[in-house]
Length: 107
View 1 (tube, helix red, strand yellow):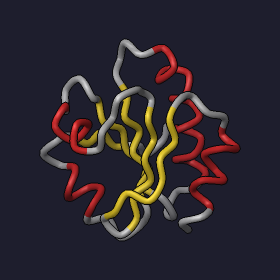
View 2: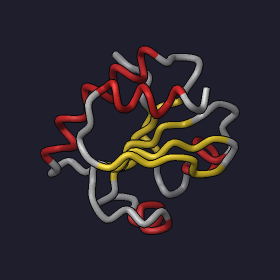
View 3: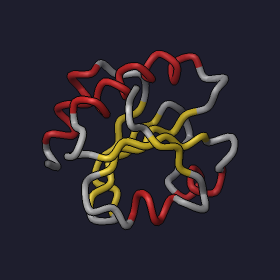
View 4: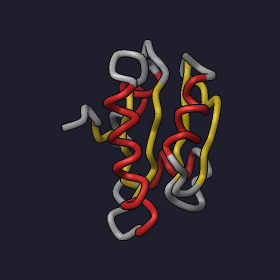
């Protein structure tokens, strides 16, 4: 099982913005088909980058404030944060190679 944590509006700052390592945030919702498709890819990334990247999920239905703050209009949206700042965004169900290449730039 992967080490993916769920974050909320309340824990976002502590878990993501204050993180010592880059963070990949998966903005998703249970009803979203493409989100379910990208889920296993995100799990693989979490396992592959253990210790280098923190991977978290944020349910946009339950946590609309953070989703709104980052202008999430379609899901899945994956955002890379480093040093408390948004440094990259990937929208849609993308292959693992795309996510790996995106993350590699920030390690």
